[in-house]
Length: 206
Image (cartoon, rainbow, N blue to C red; front, side, top):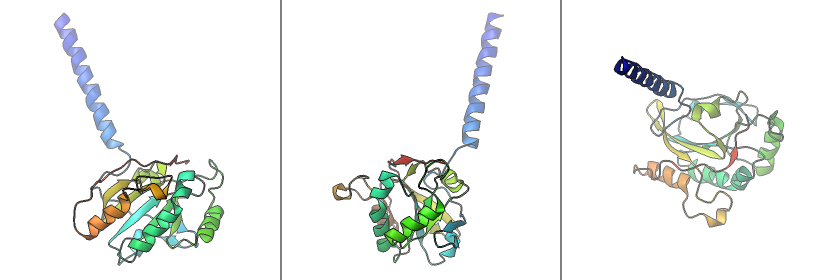
């Protein structure tokens, strides 16, 4: 009788564990390296709706989740601009997305995005994730948080996830330019190393 009870308990433990693992897989949030990324359609600071499919000649994209007010994002604004200047002509334009909810974090409204973009003279789309869904689909948690996508026929494949470089606070101290190195590797058909790094920044306020 005792052995039967033990067997029943073990069976229940295995069932619960299996359900837990299945549930985790079913509700996994965000992309991993090698996943196919979905397109989106978001409003740019210009007032136009922008999708990745609009860039027919692009070889891929540098998708940056960023914002107006986070000190880490502000410290990387010139670096984001430099990435666009360097890689847009090579087929990898920057697409910046603000995932923050202005009702949760002041300074993040669409009008304030427009002002920031004008003051910076941005050369890339700065899009408003107004339903706060795109960042969740991608799995972004910080600003800034970068996803490098590569076009393969009709798919967009995630090739890098993480930080722009290894010195989020101080551009003068950078020793590894993770995003630039990843894009150069893709352009040269060589492996991306590293494929992931830790994004350091402010938590997304959505």
